[in-house]
Length: 326
Picture (cartoon, rainbow, N blue to C red):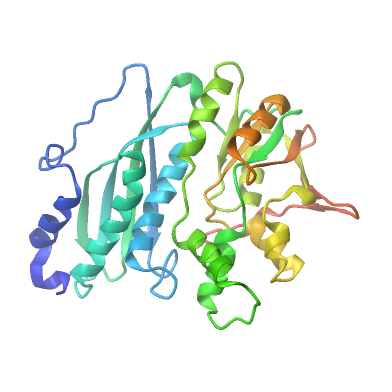
């Protein structure tokens, strides 16, 4: 059955089943917010052929990834989610089953944080386009910004980078000859199709932010991009230790070192958090988060971002990160 067979109202009726019945149905959703909290709003747009394709992402994964991008932004701001709205632009020839599976993927991830879909819109389009707006709340004293990093802070990543890009490579080239176990291959592919937004990190940050500032953002556009953005906004620089980059040695078992480093720095869509904070607090945070979290470098006064290994220093290039109109 195609969308054109049931029309706008028929599709809306099906999609309303994914929403709380006591919130939807009017021209807008009414949500309560704690008076001691501030509202945090973020929007992401995903387009067929740019962010996903039938080759790499089934509908459930598209829905999951669309939600993950927004929840990751909330986590990067120190905010907990209240609800999301979904805007869809769809071809009439698209199957209704594809759209229902899309929503199933959304709902599966939203269920982890008990977050409802509270509204949205649909329209006809030649290209599948998904626009998600996420609403969250955060204490004014616990909001994480990109502009407050200070020399002497260390830089923490909450997990591995390059996993998603490696998974994408395996999906695009299924016959790629790499001696990789099925379990490892699945792990990389799962990282690309079902990334995990790091809302779980927020409880660990509350105690730190009661006394100290944490600077940061998520790494959806790549670790290198996050480092460059933070340093530019804070008017500082950074030194990154090559030996401390999570996942680099693992990826370089199957792909050459230059390619592995490029994916770790610029691959994107890993949805980890990149945080700058005092070293003593950073060590406690890394211990609490587990082995995938690492201190990878430090903030310096000189406004440059360099990668340091045993033999040489390399400057990171913002031009290598994903830019939509370059």
